[in-house]
Image (cartoon, rainbow, N blue to C red; front, side):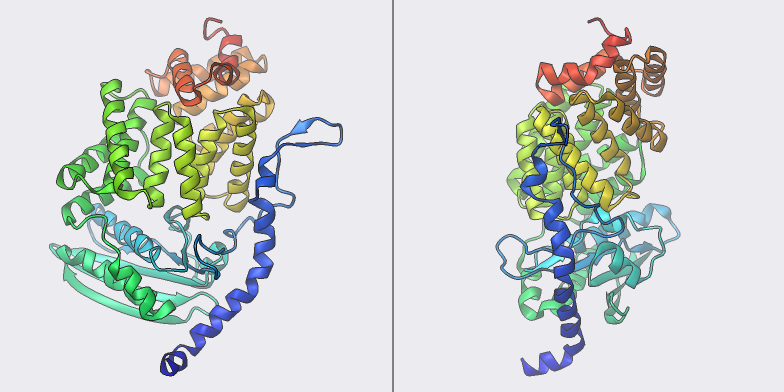
Length: 474
């Protein structure tokens, strides 16, 4: 033990510094994410308004590290950055992304390691930040980086583990293996990083946890599908990802992540009115997400996909339940919080106010996040549910500016404009939506909202503007 302490004296010193900084960061966190934020409060005139953070959320950093459920001590904050793909074939980019995602999953198993979610570390992919700058942006003390080069059936992986306070490399290794050994390489990297932070106890936790799948082909197809889904937009990209992950579920029916992603892609087809047989897609999605949850109910990504699927199946209560569970397991995952905001936005007015608090928090933490426009969409929907149509219009105009080909955003904007008496603007926005996706008519949009809300009153508030603009029968 004495020998280990001597060898890792600098590392322990760095950890002590992180603990010292917690007092600075935990206070704002407690003020922003507390039950009190989710209650309505009265303004000076006595009018009830939605709760907002008492102080501005930090713009360029993640929330401070907090103790994970079941652990009395503060977690060690670490981020795994997207590995660079150095292969000549751009189709191999999924390998680099897949390694990063699997490292995040593996390290999350190790005791008190608080691993930054994939969505937030991947948001910095093209920023060319230094390790120290990444540490400041993500509020972590340690960073794993690396690159991958594939040639035929061989792959070279270089991984580095660094301390962010000074950029010092704590561990590095180069692997020259066959592609078939990629899962072994990921496990070895994760175990070395865990051992450097917590000794053999952490290393054992990584190694003793069962893999979600041992089928390399199923893993590869799923990672390719996730990559396609993340970098592409629209029905064509979704369909390509769907075909890839469908094959993965056939190769390994018990692969929870593959089943969850398959269900989410099926429901994307339904909600965008691009599914050839919507009823069959709903049935298949329900079966897939139930199977995924039976196998991976402790995986935040599986819970996030489940939350998205359940609400689109009209099971909003189930959606909120699994997403709340996901935020407990991964409290710093802005994607998990964001989709919780979506499910709440379609609910009661109290739930819509909670959605606004969450979306405001997300946008305050990471305004340049790739999904910021989605959080603005959820803000807009929640505002329409609260009959605050001027605010809704402002948010939704941001949405269509950021994502001009998002048909549902244009239809939401049509409703907000119509509710404000802007008939011409509402009709123009609805026409733009239908031009992008001819299947998304105002009537079908109302059907989508009705399923998401499960409540006639909320549906009427959200779609009122379409009636006022003469786009629907009253």
